Figure 1: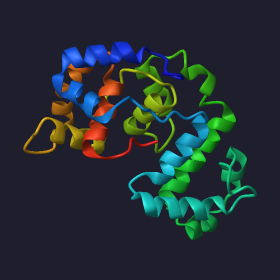
Figure 2 (figure 1 turned 90 degrees about the horizontal axis):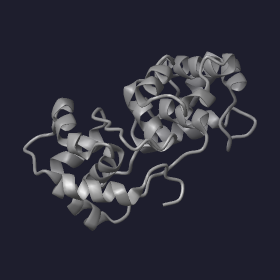
Figure 3 (figure 1 turned 180 degrees about the horizontal axis):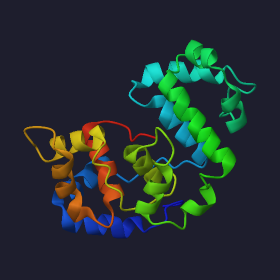
Length: 210
C-alpha cells in the first residue's frame, strides 16, 4: 500500500497467526485504510479543538474559529493564533482552557521548542515525551499523531474509547475493557498494534480519529 512505512502483507500474516479474531476482522472489513495527514501542525490544532466534544459541535466551533482569520480554509498560523484576543476565542466557542492550549502550541512552534523535523528520528516513546511538553497534548493525542502522521506500526492507544469499544464487540466481552485489559488483548498484535487497533475501530463501527 502506497504511503505505508511497513509491509501490510507482513502485518496481515502476523495478525492472522497471532489472533484469529483480528484475522476475522481483516476478512470482514477489508484492507487497512489509514487516514494519513501531511501537516502535523494543522493536525494538532484540530485535535485540541475537538477534545471532549462531539463531532458536529466541534465542527461548528472550528468553522466559527477559522472565520476569524484571513483564510478560513487554512489553519491559522502560530502568529495569528497568538494575536487572537480572549473575547474572539470566546465568541467562536473556544473555551479559555483550549485557547491556552492553542496559544501554547503556537508558541512552541514559533520558538522551535516543538521541532517537527526531529520527530521522524525519535522512538515512539520519545515522540510522546516531545509532544506532551505542549499544554493540552496528552498521551492520546500523541498516539493518534504517531499512527496517522508518522505512520508508526506498533501503537496501541488504550486510552481511546473507540478501540476499547471495538474490543468489547470483537471479543464478546461483558463490559468495556480497562486500559490494562486492552493492553493485554492487544499484546499479541505487536509489532503491528496500529493495524490491530484500526480493526477495532472497524468492529465498533467508528472512524479512526484524525
